[in-house]
Length: 398
Ligand SMILES: *Cc1c(COP(=O)(O)O)cnc(C)c1O
Image 1 (cartoon, protein in one colour):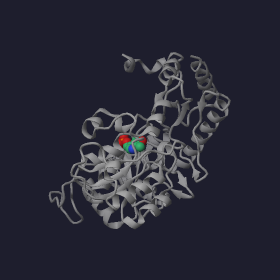
Image 2 (tube, helix red, strand yellow):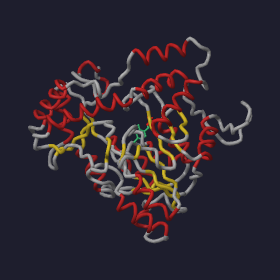
Image 3 (tube, protein in one colour):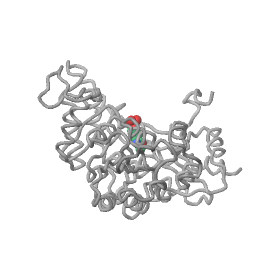
Image 4 (cartoon, helix red, strand yellow):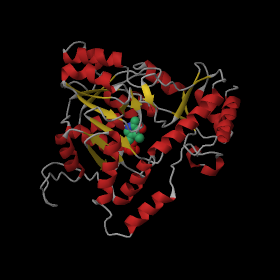
């Protein structure tokens, strides 16, 4: 019954959207018009995002997952194609590959950030492109018909962007599609480069726990006109440019965002910088109040990360401490927290399909076993951060 406990049992919520009257008014305004989909709010929201990120195009969709899926279709990645990605992520960055019958080539992560380990990526690319050591990189089963290496899908974990220039440099000789899953990192920068802006395509997500929200929603950004046109068509039931409502050039989807969501998103987008500043302040408070606790490791921000877009605040308990017990004790103290992420390769479906085993990706598994996402939103006060910190200290006495 654990999941059915009322929210009131907690003193603080795990995450919270930041919605003001400006957002409420914008949504209401749409509801006074007959244009609830396919209208100017969507266009305006897309424009706001492409302006901010600095790409030529942006396409709003109804989830981050839908956005990632469309990018793979636009890149022509299909059955048996290989795509390098990491298993330390939210499930959808890998699931979208399976939607198209492509095979995720998992590469372990950098223990400091949880982002894909670029040294391993370089080895994997060279091996796979030259047809060497296939066995080392392919899963035990489910890859009997493995095709060519077609792409790389790095994830900006917890709001810290991958060094995308390095990814480009490594993959350049092999003409791979780079799809950046920036669903956790809108507004973040690596060496001054905005997350999502330099990859062939980048994707943001707007579920209510993200930095900005549209309820459900996502956004693809790209500067590639051909991919942009294809993503537009596939979002809209496969209608190519010039098609009528009942002409469908491609096999498409209904991945459109509605106008209420877009109106909400546009106002949130205008407030993004303020929202990110507040989140950085909350992260700084956590850092201050947790740094003296010897039993935990705090999130690391690399020097190359010139701007964090704090999505969650994930600490690690030191090796030997029972993480799940700490979560249980926090819960008893009316503080919600969550194990985050759960390694993708150990999800039942991935074990069944690809034969993964414990120990296959030790860093991912270690992070997955020791991480705790603490309550985090830009509405938290320093007092509340202190409350969580004290509860954590108590919960660590085992
Ligand atoms: C949130 C998220 C997504 C997309 O989630 P949706 O719920 O489909 O919007 C994708 N990848 C990562 C890493 C995420 O955190």
